[in-house]
Image 1 (cartoon, rainbow, N blue to C red):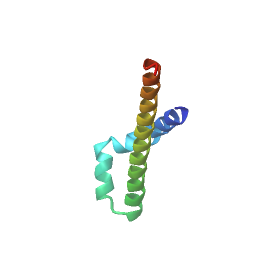
Image 2 (spheres, rainbow, N blue to C red; image 1 turned 90 degrees about the vertical axis):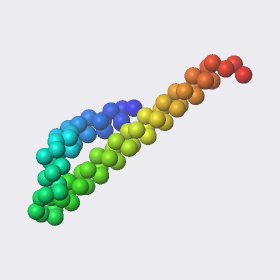
Image 3 (cartoon, one colour; image 1 turned 30 degrees about the vertical axis):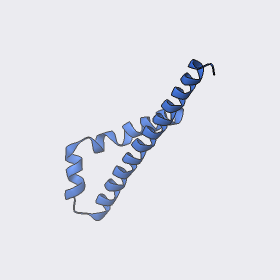
Image 4 (tube, rainbow, N blue to C red; image 1 turned 180 degrees about the vertical axis):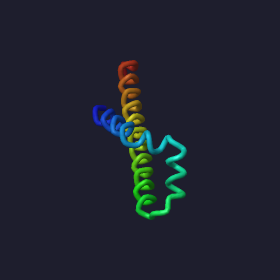
Amino acid sequence: MFFSCLLMFFYYIFFYNIFFNPLSLMYVFFSNTLLKKTVLCSLLLCKWAIIRRLVEDASKEASHNNKCVDEVRSPF
């Protein structure tokens, strides 16, 4: 849980301003240098990887919590 919170903290610091600003997305596709496109596209892939990891962690934790609740409810 702490690791997920830490990832979200870094996600908002480094990626929020880049990927939620439409002008920066236009900059990725219309920039002239290949290096800028490569760096920004790799940051975009990192963003999606972090979001996917956080969603998987949250779903695993939720399913584990549901199993624990079911075990408590059923005495057999």
